[in-house]
Structure formats: structure tokens, C-alpha cells
Amino acid sequence: MQFQTIPAYQELDQIPRDLRFHPGGVQAPAILSRQQIEAFNRDGFISPIRIFDEAEMAGHRRYFDDLLNRVMAAGGDSYSISTAHLKYGAVYDLLTHPRIVAVVKDVLGENVIGWGSHYFCKMPGDGKRVSWHQDASYWPLTPSKAVTVWLAIDDADTENACVRFLPGSHLFGHLTWHLSETDESNVLNQTVAEVERFGAPFDSLLKAGEASLHSDLLLHGSEANESNRRRCGLTLRYCTPDVRAHLGWNEKGVVVSGTDAAGHWANLSRPELG
Image (tube, rainbow, N blue to C red; front, side, top):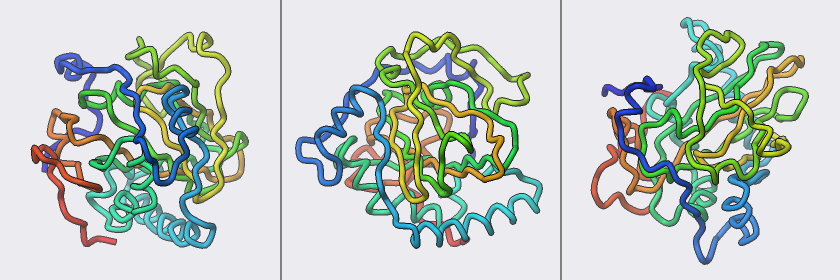
């Protein structure tokens, strides 16, 4: 299985992509309210959404603590656990979990592909921020019908650098960005500047087991964690099956609800590794 984790921007520029916001929401949502779906279409996100209770999330936190120790012992770091659903059965189980998928279905519809999973773990005092960016800038997908569920493994607040959203920024299409590869304090390599025009950021305050959901075109980021508490979230990425993935990214996709009539996505089975 060969695919790139982050395509070079030159490669993405060669792929014709529809980077317009496509409003979501089904007529009779099962979990979300109509008001929440209206907020997603208007603001680009929903937060918070309770998924797991404290005891359930404590179990997954213990799993992640062990996984992080294993990854770091092997030379990785707290940001390097990516496309984890293809490697670890426990993460595959979260990507396909009925409670999470039910929320996504209320926005994307009955047919859903889960294709991404990445732990963003800011260790205490790690000093790294995530600059303002749009997920769609990094993904060789078209059209722009993807959402991210950000599941809080730890409590996330302003003190330990919760995610921040710029409401309504998803309605402006693909925004101009500049490379920030030389900024060692930035986890990513792209930055969208002059974001003041979008107004005040929304701080996505989440308790462990809660989640947010946002559009792939929504500007978001986070500050450096200068606190003495860890802040870990698992990003789970979903799209509709009509989305086409280039550069082999269709190999990441799992049918988590309904069907993929064209068979574009690989729909690999659950990995055995814990």
C-alpha cells in the first residue's frame, strides 16, 4: 500500500479540485438537531457533541497512553500517529463506532467513508502551535465534502491549547496561504494570514469524550500548550463516497455506513494489531 501522508503543494496544484462548500444535513437527523445542522452550514462547525462518558473515554485514554509510549520508544513523537485506523484495531473501532458515525451521517447522509485518523497530542509545555489553516489545502480530494470529528482524549481548554475555529470562514472557498516550513514552532507547513476579517475565534472547549465536527474548508488552529497538562485529540476524517481521492488516498478509505457504489474506496478490513 503506497500513499503519501501530506502531498507536496505542487502535486495538489496539478489536481483539478472543487473547493467550494457544499451544505450538509439530512431532513430527519437522528442525533443532531436541526439547529445544530443549520449552525454547521452557517458557521462551519458544531461543538460540543457528547460521544462517550468519562469511564468509556478513560479506557481509551489508557490505550492511547500505552500506544504513545510504544511509538515514542520506536523513535516517533506525539504528532506522528497518523492514518492510525490502518495500523491499530482500536482506532479502526473508533473510526467505525456507531455513535460517531451516526453524528456524521446527520451531516453527510447515509453513505459515508471514513478515511483519516490522526492523534494531535500536545504534551505539557511543548511550545508548538497549529497555525490557521484549511484541511482541504492538504488533501487530494474533490469535491470538498469532507468533515473532521475532533474527539477529545483529554479535557481541552484555553489553558492547554484547545482548537479554535473562525466561524463562517468555510464559505469563502479555498483561501490563499503561505509556506511556513521554517517556523519550528508550527506543527504544519502552511499558514493563512490576515484572518482578522473573519472576526473573533471560537474556542472549542471540550471535556474528554466530547467532540467537535468541522468542515474541511473551515479555518482553524490552536496555540502552543504552555500548561502542565497534556492536550490530546483524535481527528477522524469522513467524506461522501462520490468524493474522489488522488495520489492513492482511496486506499485509506473504509465504508462506515451505506455503500460505495463505484467501489472507489479500498474498504480495507480491521487490522489485527491492538
